[in-house]
Image (tube, rainbow, N blue to C red; front, side, top):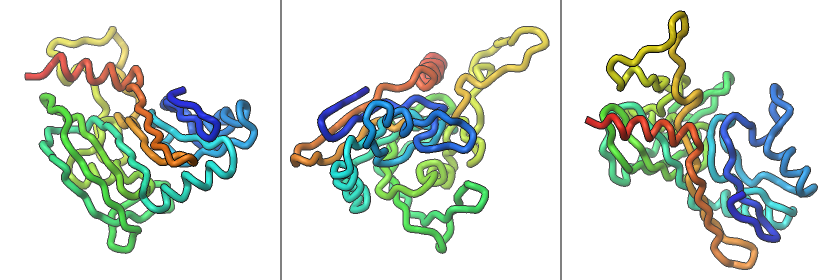
Length: 228
């Protein structure tokens, strides 16, 4: 838990767990929250594989209050992502409409809903980039498709062109055990909801930052150790 008051609970969502009910997995964040707070409502959604800050309202008034801020684009959201390739960006805005597809993916098209994201480089590695992503809108897979449109897909996001990260790709002479196949260091896309800022019911600003998950930290450690 990152923050708790009488209106909200902010957690650091782990990867591999759905925010809402999932047809495949019975465990989800909303169900877990309601075991603790019967009237809990999740105020926004993170992809199942995405880690980081998630806001949960403890009662209906708090939910409505934050939902309106999301609707009016008043919530400040910051994500960190590791992207394939080297990209030196400074507050670079992607303004590209997004259309949801029947197969659960999205594409960029003028027929889609408006979507804007600003990107800045936090650190350059040999073949990867740690990016700061600031979505203005909240469309499905927005950061993923916008980064892919820049030729900078998120590492491990194979749906939108990202490649799994293999240690052998940066370590010469790296070998796996006989008769085994090398597995990616991260078994998901390298996307983390780093921080969230909004106004509480009392008018005070609520801010929370989520430490990186273990797999995200391990990826950055490997990339840092092999910068050339």
